[in-house]
Picture 1: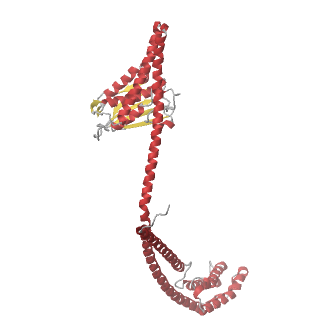
Picture 2 (picture 1 turned 180 degrees about the vertical axis):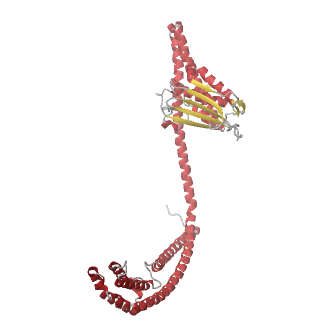
Picture 3 (picture 1 turned 180 degrees about the horizontal axis):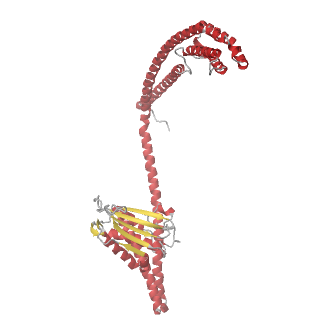
Length: 489
């Protein structure tokens, strides 16, 4: 198979791409060269202007003159025997003077600008100080008598030190003026380089944007396609997993009560002796009734859940007394489970709790949560159902708050993140047919229905879980439902 022919348009695009790449390379090289040059010039200027101990006014020579006078004054006081004068102080001043004289030729800028006259003056001063040094060393052991006449010797250095100071100030000023001119030249060059950097950087940006713009559409298209494929794959995996979980759960939940109904009814039909035993017949009928009730409840929950998820649940807001509806729902639960009546405490205020809400949905929330607490809190746990005005923090807040708390074992931490999903119990997740969910009386749909009903009502569901101590469910209804947004309302 022959290679596809290159059309004139494709050739032109290839030439443009090649020119852009070449131009980008040239601009990049120019940008790098200008950057390096600017850094070198900046570094040299900063190094010259911030040299350590940089003397721009000849202060070092003036300091030598100052310490010279202090030394002469200390020697005069020592010869006069004044109080407080001692050999140590005079020796210290002499050491400072000697050190500054010897350091002057190595101190910037004198290390670079020391001319022959300054060198001669420094040598003369150094020679005189060297002759005096022996006398100061002798004074350490023999006392002040060794220093007699040293003051006069050092006084003879005044003209030399004056010439040294004047010459140093002159040389330092001239040198600083020259260097300032150099710094200005460096600053001008640096400005030019910075402008060049800005221009080349702009050209670099333009060339780079032109090179990248041709690929942005393809990159965005590939990213969008990759995201769509990943989302489609995730949706397919999630849907397949949900289908498998739903089929496994429903198979178990439906088959268990059906098997019980079928087994007990077949026994009564097949064994005549059982029909003669009235007590056995009643017991079998009770099992059949219980299993059929469980099956009917499961079907009702499934129908309710499917209607809610398909946005077909009709919410009919009306003015109701929340306290009356809560009491009615609790009475319905206790009528079906009279053995739990002693464990449930209902607290309803005497005054009405006005609320605009769907009465059927409110009762269903109360019944589901109360039933869950009865089934999973344990035979000895106490259950408290309380309804009040407000939001739990203050009674003057709008809305109505329902609180259902038990003293049971609480909810396992591994289940908390999945509360509200179908076939998830508040105390035990469905893991297969070996679970005892139907023995406890639930299929794991109650909390999922409660979560969706509270969302439809515009309310809030919160769970305060205390493992080994109990769990508290709180449902808050706003004073009025949210505005209708479609067929759901």
